[in-house]
Image (cartoon, rainbow, N blue to C red):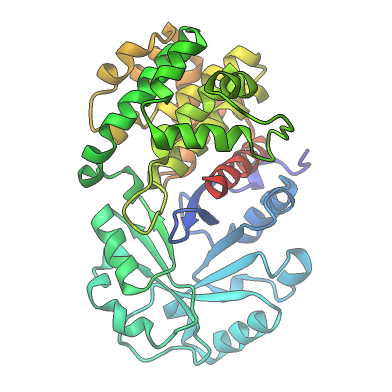
Length: 400
């Protein structure tokens, strides 16, 4: 447990940074106010929450506007291979800061020139990686500029919608962050509509504890769903040595609780048209589900309550996925009143937990402190829960 008082543990939401397949690559903190004064304390909070041990493949993008705020011995406190210094372009100009950049690069830190101005002279002659704020309207002309850095892992940030995401992909960006996952994607809805309807029917049957033969009928109507079921029960995660020969056997091996969770995740898992990339909503829904369950467990919830919390997190984005009212979507699922109250009114204990979870991976952090106080969670516990939640998110995104 962290021994430092909460007053000096900076609160931040942890925004996901993904690759071209929409798999988790890194996180970047969003602070209520400028982060330079907090960044080292924030990294220390992640370290004490075991983030770097739990997620050995994940990077942390650290936004820096004042290089002088970083201690020269930063590499002695944190692994330089895990920290990406996103240094504002304006901070790279002075000779003093160029010396600092070379110092940190020599220590093994990856440096991104943040808020890069396309077409402008390079402010640092060792520039390899750049990040661009898509709110600045630079995406349309950025492709030619990126050719100057052919080996860079360039980041397009604050992407607002799917159209901007496609422009960024076409321009040659490799990493992406922003709110685009929450924008509608009508062009994909018609092709996936019938499959998602079957998934909702399956979830309704599982919730009502229907007979396995009723589940088999729906599985047999979807070749892809059937393949994924057999792939899952044959995976190393289940360590099955028995050969699976029937749908009934696959359902039994998986178990109803795991089947329900898997179906919830599959609602979001249908692939986009971008070279087999995952639906961007899947990562966000998986994060909400995992964090809801972990917070519920930390607050003393029993197994059934944890399952309900997981479901609430997973279902909280169905209205965005289906572009329909939440009430209409949930009506056939036979959910309990506590779950419905949380999803429809954000009321009750789980509704309060959901309000926190909805802030935890978005660039809206002013309410974080009050949400944590209402749930009697401290900042140390918050970062521990976030680290554990991203472990599961990282796993499911790699497995899909």
